[in-house]
Image (cartoon, chains in turn purple, cyan):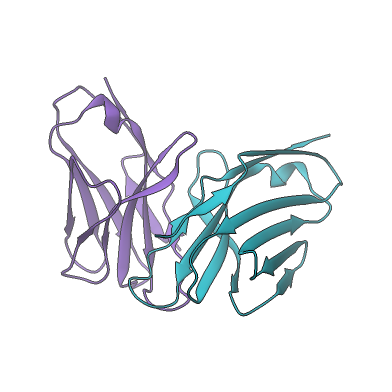
Length: 113
Length: 112
């Protein structure tokens, strides 16, 4: 009964390095989302994928790219990490449409030095 | 655009009731959610209400909706130390992209 699984759970990067955050869901959900959470800022949407094969920008997409690899997996890539991208990143999924709450992973805690 | 506002902190004594407030701005029909985030974890859905409802009760949780003022509240009866967490209010329009807008979260601290 895994739900939404994010890897890694923790990561430290140097400025300019690249990395990919992985997310997978086993609930056969159509929609998937990437958020970042910063103290006092709540959740801010980076990118989302309403359905397999589509991706759209959210509120704060700059510096990030995403790939909806298949229905289960949605990855977030930082091409050239910056200290401003130090944050906790959450992946979520939902059925999509109507009343369909989001199901969240436990987050990836990313520090960029 | 949509905006969801919450107070940032609430401190209560164990056994008392907690009331967490939220205001939203979307004028269309909408779903309104309460999520709970415990330390080191992701958000978990606590309860939800549709904007044509006034109240919803689920065990110790009561959600009240004032549609005129676009004000939503979450009441937790008999608050326990295990209720200490961050509580997020979110609204989601019932049509369109179904992208929810989250408030900044209210940190609930329950002390003995």
